[in-house]
Image 1: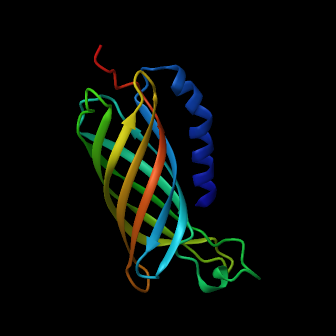
Image 2: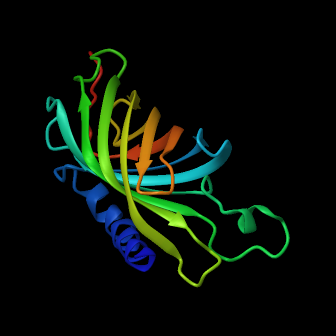
Length: 192
């Protein structure tokens, strides 16, 4: 499964310059870094996230999104030691859902949003020959703001999310803070 994820990510990244040259394509891509606080396991860890959304119209209040993330929040004990660490100690997650948003502010280009996503959590195993165990259901909700530069396809997105993971020996609750760089259709034009 991680090999498929890498192939999909490479295809998206290779295609992104073509999308940027055609302002009529409503695909929005984002990538960011963050911190995941796994409340259940008392672990804080860095994360790398990326995704895409179908941003067809600036006045849509609901946009479908697909997101992926790698983090080290669920490292098993052998992965946490500095010596003799296995190669595979990162957790991964694929989520699909919707971003609910308000129209951008006409003066500043700031747009608040909320998200609701469901997907599969891949727990790092690292010790028994398998890379991931992907039998865990995840639900994530969150909110944040997006800031777009005037007359540009670029922007930033800051969000806070709460994630619940089931299917493990115990439920896991995670809180994520994420800052992301966004490229997509030009939407915000300031008043003259």
